[in-house]
Length: 299
Ligand SMILES: [Zn+2]
Image (cartoon, rainbow, N blue to C red; front, side, top):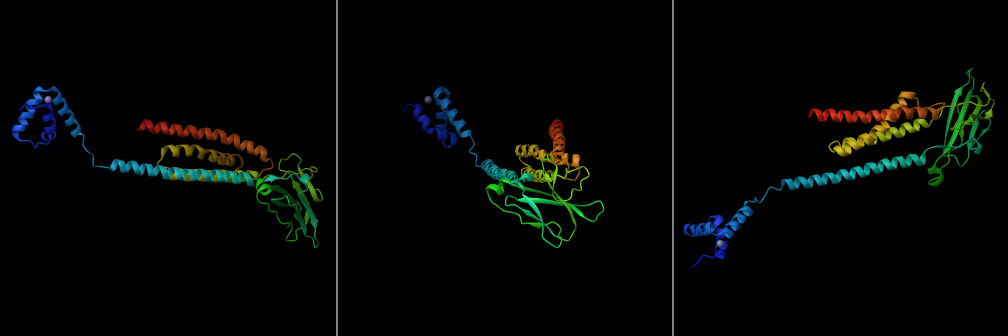
């Protein structure tokens, strides 16, 4: 019987497995030597058998765990950025919008036995009262301002209670209302004018402290993200760049004003802080790049 290619191909798997008798082996090898087609077929089978069936699935598990890790990190990142957006939104909505005195948001009234009462209108969401002793120390000068917020006007109305300026029976010489834009100066709304320079008396403006708190909150959140994602270089580096924005502002505040957040000329001080913070921020970015370059050269 002539050994056909088909017969050889049928028994090649057994030949490869070494399960043929010596005679059959010899027959296959003899055919292969003469038949190019079967030789190629055998080579293909060898190659195919040569591919190891990898029973080690640890790389797959690793991919799976990496994917899961990424998923968790993405989730945390989304939450963090939601918090950042939420904080900024709430800060924006509740940011004090100082009420100019022309709206007569506060009136001062004596209610007997020396008590002086500040009566706030419904539109007032918050107020600030500061008192300073007069030069002779026998009496006090008061400064009041009031504010509203987008939150109070549009979302949840809440009024402030009227308040007694001198609960301990201090003498009230004068009460000024101050506008935060600083244009009109402070307006005498009660008592006599104690300002030697005339009707205008300038008072500490307080919104710098508010901005400082926002900067600290942002820096803290970014810091937390950096701690959580310290193994994820991309997120870490990106967050670090954001992190240095509030940090630059905080340092700018420290450089310009020290630890005091009030200012007689807050708008000018704010510009000064920003002018300090911007180059600081650029310096931080450059420092990050330099450190990165230095590290990559070393390794
Ligand atoms: Zn053949």
